Image (cartoon, rainbow, N blue to C red; front, side, top):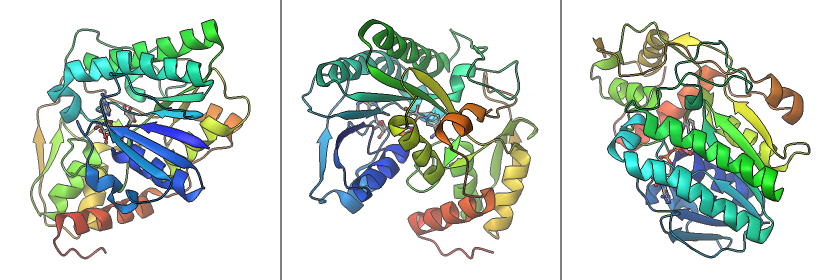
Length: 316
Ligand code: NAD
């Protein structure tokens, strides 16, 4: 099929493009590199079924795609705090443009939303029915609230024009092709541990997170896009294995054979206390569940990071 991936030079997008090419699809990747990198698509940039367009998706462009994965958006706090207006625009104007394209082409459409739409959740774990607890004027709102608006736009295109849409709320994902210092927990900890630098924990380390390896996430995106009974549906994709931030730091130090110490710094504004996906719906409708264990995923990620950092590291 002819498939458009916006944000295809980013962490998740580049892993998705690779998977789509492996499955025989023709891929148009559109990215303006605001947080992505050419390095992420270098391995397949000359592939005969791959086309890259450096472009901002808030601006018009033509495509005859039959399937649209709309992933473009800064995703890490470092990215969206540096580019708050661009983040709002890509999730609102950019989403509107991609929905219009889906309408014109009669294409299948998927938007990558986020667990951040649940804000600092008052319900635990979070299922798709939970409406969230978001501060609409805080520094993170450029991301949370624009993703919420993006979801609203998608559902209006579904209700008004019967476009073949689905929303995927992605929880913390990690793996190869994530930016080394993108500010998120796993890339930060691995980079610091491999360099034997102090590991920075914001807060006392007792906040909890659940993490998903990128190949599992990509499998979930594929199933959400192509499985029956997904039109107009919302799916959480994440892990139900919950650990404290301190436990992640300790595990990464161990796997990297690192001598890093742990430094505790002031919590970031509006950083949620607990985050864990309820993925019952994805299991039931998509038959999706996590395959890669946390330790295996972390080992593969550490190996990739250590090559990128270009410094020898023994994986225990
Ligand atoms: P990323 O920053 O690595 O990738 C996003 C890509 O979108 C980048 O390559 C960036 O250059 C591109 N982009 C941004 N604005 C653009 C624009 N206006 N036009 C064209 N390209 C643009 O982030 P990621 O982690 O790969 O996230 C991908 C998607 O998944 C995002 O929509 C994000 O909100 C969502 N998500 C990711 C996570 C996670 O843990 N990684 C969690 C929840 C949701």
